[in-house]
Image 1 (tube, rainbow, N blue to C red):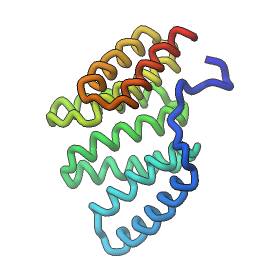
Image 2: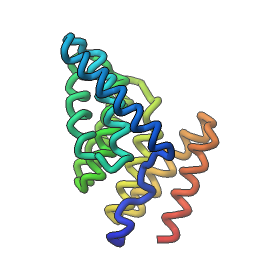
Image 3: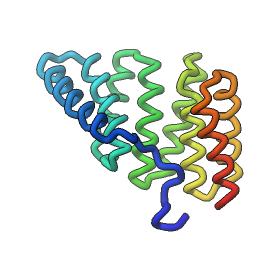
Length: 175
């Protein structure tokens, strides 16, 4: 991919002001949770910080929070949060340019989803993996990832997710 378009369908949040408000609130919650030793609140705040920092081009900050969140999720046995953290960490790492590590994190998230029988994040993991595969020039792999994500998204019936996946498949053809 060209330098100017080094990310395929990069994750963004349209309402930047809302994201900045969420970041400020979660930074405050994290500070208080660290002071009180409240690990579940630390986990939640770090996960949300990672989610909101990444689309604002602050992926390096997000990685720090998400790596800590992943360790906390595992320590606390929060399996659904572990999978969600793997998704967001993979996305953040992808935007730092370490796409191979990102693919490993997406794969780990999918494996954990299957092992734990928690599939809420599977379509997101597949979709984000597909985007990363496109960036690596692995177009056939990306098609398979998007097709798998689309099958799940059609089954769960969220039109917005179905449409973004269909659009991603069309966009691959334009490359």
